[in-house]
Length: 496
Image 1 (cartoon, rainbow, N blue to C red):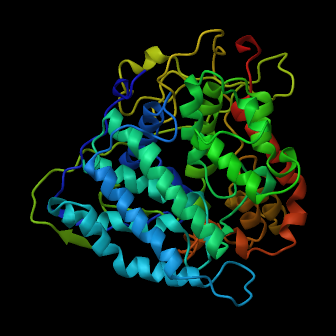
Image 2: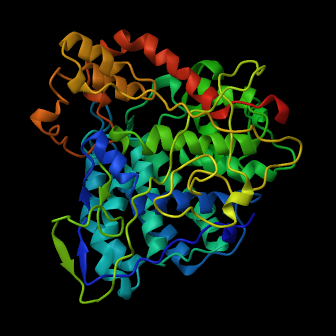
């Protein structure tokens, strides 16, 4: 199904006063509020449209590119050249190289000029609303790390420019964003990681999909859906052809890590050995991305919100005068995406859950009415796939109604030791979330004491500052997260 079958992205009209974006997410409640905003819906729909646009198209890309795409690649080429001009320091440094901060200082000083060169004069008033996302896209210059939150910032950067219609929301342009702009971005961040030895930001260790990125696996599995010969098990037989972003990301892991693949990358190994089609891989990765990245406070807490990605109507942030009169699009209150727990189909060896996707007919009428309850047949396209199910099988009947176990409310716990134990005992968090909960004081989240203090930006995860013995204490719980990929990517026996 073509990209045009998906709902179109809204056109952001420049208002007379713009709200300056800044950090808004401080608590888990803020994460849930963000997931009910128009900006969250926009981003979910944006990455889904890009995924659909690249199905059946491979690297290197030989299609045409617009002037906007060419100028974006030129911008990335400029900042890539700075790495050669700012060599790493030769002194011994345990975590990252301090020269990365010099590179970041140059980016901050010259970013406004780069944006003025990139955007036409008519869009220069929105530069203060867009450049914070690009500045955040290359890592933390304080913590000297990089992770999926920084990758998310670059995705939001492209999304904002599409809402402004700098990039046109048509299939050719969206395909070029994935196959031309995004590979150049990966070239920049991969070189930054190699030269300045950047640490993973909040890595899940071997139980994470990848230490640094996620989107290459989503869009790469989307590319391979109509591949004539490629199948997920082929990942276990290197060398891999660099024709998809998925293969390129796996090849990089093989270059950086040693030892058996099933030991240093068990999640990717589980996908390759257990999921039969790229279509199922693609659908499961969308669910996993929403659960492990977009729904994690430690990942999204540093993303600036406001302006193009609106936060609240009652926001009292500083405004930027533009001299243009317009009306902002209406806000919504319906959650954009949800992460249901899939019911396990019987007689499916090696799996604990099944995977279900919305039938394509549900997409014919676009998104459900605002305010309508969310269900397996009434979910927005940011999560559900609009493509027809490949022939040779059928989907499982329905999603289970039982929600995932959430973190126990702190105010309901009276004993401090019991409170700390229950805070850690959640089935949805990753290693970074467990570490944060293990080291949280007994009174940290009690509502009477007000919201938690704001953690300064410069990092996507707080896990690096936690005590070293936390990992040993939480080892049994960390190992239980190896079931996540089985829950999200399980195989329905009737589909094989």
